[in-house]
Length: 155
Image (cartoon, rainbow, N blue to C red):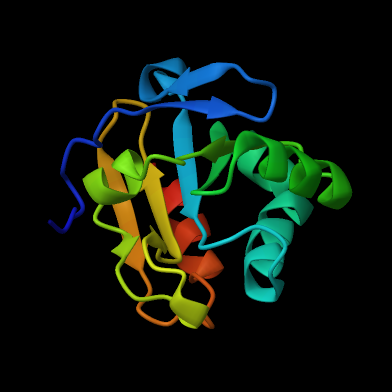
């Protein structure tokens, strides 16, 4: 399954690092950037989320919230969030439902760690419609942050 611009974003219910359930409905009326990443504490994943952290005021001015999603446990993600001073929620898709619903399930990752999230970015508008999608086949690549910003500025 491949989600495209104009599709309704699939709903989700996942726990954040504060053990609070978060769903798509919680962001109604706001733009939402969802960053999927394979694993916490890895180099490119850290760069991906730190780039969002370092630009969070810009996204806030555009009425946008940011989420990071991986299959890591809420406990690992809590440590990762704390160490990197992320001010946005990290959600645990431990059971791999959201990564399947969003079409970012990575069958064959490195070192035999199969079933993680592909690196991906989605921009969802205030009405729950996908306005931007980027799913990367190489975990070594970063999303196009310029395209994410341009999409938000056009909303």
